[in-house]
Each structure stands twice: as C-alpha cells, then as structure tokens.
Length: 364
Image (spheres, rainbow, N blue to C red):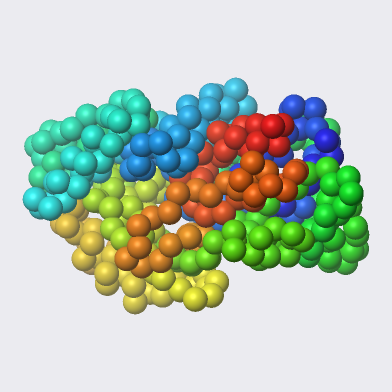
C-alpha cells in the first residue's frame, strides 16, 4: 500500500518504520521543519516499566511489550540509554497503600524486576531518601529520545520511506480507491494514498475533524495538561529515578536523570486551555514542598526553571485517566484509516508496540 503517516514524533516515526519494513511505500507528513518537535521532545525521556496501568488496557499491554522491544532496539541500533532503575516512594500511610497497589498492579501486568522495600532498605540504596516504603523497578531506564527518533527515521529511509517536512495536513478526503490528502505550506499538494495514520499528537483531534466521513462523535475531547520541569543545581543526590505516589493527572513531581548525569524534577500537572510552554518560576514553591517530602535535604535556591511539555489527555481534572485510543477500520468502518488519540505517557516506551498494532490493523 501507499501509506501516509501524519506526524514525525516518536510514535509516528515508529509506525512509519514498521509499515515500511513490511514492504509498504510510506511518507511521513510533518508540519514543522524537523522530527520530534512536539510532545516527543518535551518529556522525561524515561523508559517505563508498566506497573501503573489497569491490566488489559492498551497502556499496560503496549508499555510492557514496548519496553522490551525498546531495549532490544537501543542495543541493536546504538541508541544511548541506561537501565538505572527507579524507586516509587511513600511518605505516609495513605501513600503506602497507593504504592502497594502499584506493586500488585505491576505483578498482574507481568512487569519484571519489581521488589517491595521497607523505608530502611530504600534508604540503603539511596541515602538521601526519606520514605516509609518503596517499590523498586529494576527495568525502568532513561533514553536519548532524539537519538531514538533519528534511528527510527534511519530505518524508515533505509526501507524506502521518507519524511516530508513543512507539510501540514489540512484535509483528508475519501476517494473511490482510498484517500486524498491535502497538504499546505509553501508547496501545497494533493496526495492520493491507500491508507492514512493520524499520529499528530496534540493535533490529532483537529486532523480527525478534517477527515471526510470520519464520525464527529468519535473524536474525543482534547484536554491539555502542562508539565513543568525544574533543573537542580549541584551534584545529583540520587543514582536512580525517584517517583512519589501518583497524583491526579500524573505520576507526581519526580526525580529524573539524563544520560549526562544531570538531575531535574517534574513534571507537575498544570491544567491549561491553550499551548503555553514557558515555565513560571513561581511554581518552584510547590516543587520545593513536594520534593522535600522525600528529599528533606533539598537546598534553598537549588531549583531553576527548565522546560515544559503538554500531555494530550482525553480526560480532565478529577476524571479517571483514559487509555490510549487507537481507532482503526474494525472500529469505525472506514478502510485504510487509523486514528491515534491520547498517546501520552508511556507513549515513548510503547512506541514500537503501538507501531506493530497499527500495522496489524491496516493489514487486517
């Protein structure tokens, strides 16, 4: 088939690669001038274990399978990564019950390398930590997300596919034999294809509404949850990632490390109405309070504004977190069309597994 994938983020590139490796002719239409300029470039760069998500959900299935695939891909393609592990910590009885539930969920999801630790055992691993108990996830890691996307792009192009930059997709119309995709930009074009995959991230709902005959009632709401990050001055206090018990809309203000050893904190959850990426320095006050619950030794003045990302959520404040939404021909009845909505965390970890899922849906 001739297939157009919309969006050159990590999921779009993974999907395009999977399709090209199966022998299809694939073009990725990207509105900006480079790969990974949206959600994919503004995250924690964490390879997640898969213990947070309900058993049987797409998030659980793709995270666990995708993690295994991702480590293998990194090894075979030389993508920088490190399996550093993480601790999910509790600081009171309520949080203790939460992390016990996370541990049990992880076991049910088939997550390897999980252990439940006492507060003293956790402190023995991370002396700067203060907690009543912790879940140790040995399979959690960190990754250079841009290097990952470059490797995916390399495989795509080696298999005959390509990425078209500055090619915003404005409309998708049905034809007798498939679809016609209208692109804008400096060189507008009409491209006939057999199939389309909408992996447009924050733009997925808008593109779905611009797709002829796709039922409007199938387009889910887009809820924007901004995640702010703060860098931390001084030497890293931890050798592993440290996560508190989850909060409404996210996994809590946690410690992340990059491959250079730099320590940063975030993301928090800030519900917003429009895309804004500036980090308000005043939010540091809430970061100090949250972080000092598990790291009392955080010095005054150590936090500096870093960057922010926006999660493309399908549910809002106080609502249960939504699963990934992959809407294919079997569900909506239109041949050669797959819509991806709400691919937030653990989207990067899940990307290779999601890609195989999309390829199967189009093959069927």
